[in-house]
Image 1 (cartoon, rainbow, N blue to C red):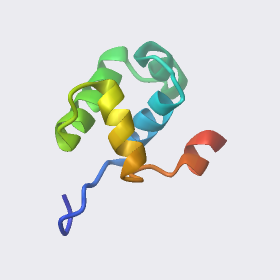
Image 2: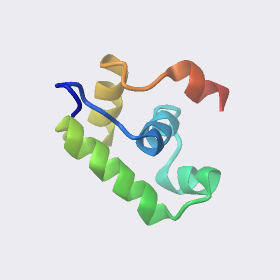
Image 3: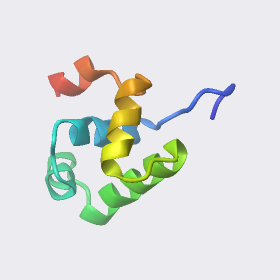
Length: 76
């Protein structure tokens, strides 16, 4: 958190953005040219930061709190 505001790194935002589009961790890894376990690690960190119960809950929280810019995600 920075100044009481939740902060997601650029890569966490990318991974969550692709997750909101319905991509699996395997598909995200391929698209970002990173290892599957790295994607899972980013998802774990985001869930922990958001206190999300699971990936679907994390997606809901990211979208409802406007933590990613969907226009940027959808353009990629």
